[in-house]
Image (tube, rainbow, N blue to C red; front, side, top):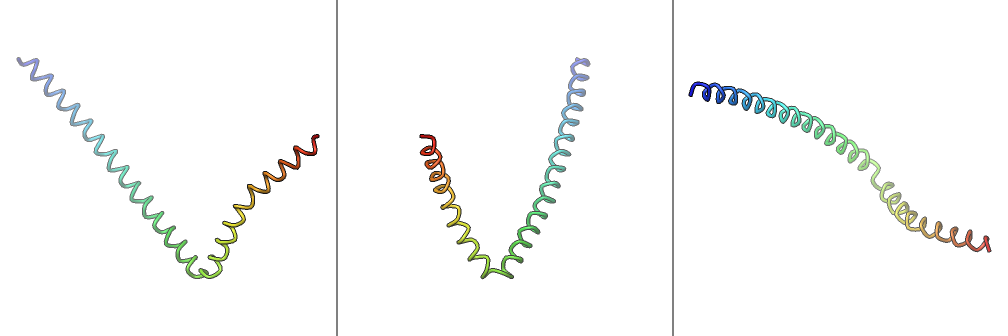
Amino acid sequence: QQELKDYEHEYDLIIRKDFDEITYQIDKFLQNQKKSYKKLRQFILNELHSQSSSSSSDEGEIESSSSESSIIPENIAYNHKKRLRSHH
């Protein structure tokens, strides 16, 4: 009976140790998350701030870049066809 008590006590200690370790790891993780979140928030605010100070020119750039990206695949396909023809 005493042996069982010893085992239970040992088991309790192990569980408590594991629990402490897990709690510590979670705390550490949450601290890192908080730091990352603060950095990200700061970065986003800076980006928004720098964009709003030159918002009128940015919108034009966004439109032109989106139309550019739709042209590029067609160019690639066209050049590819030209290359195939030149082999014959």
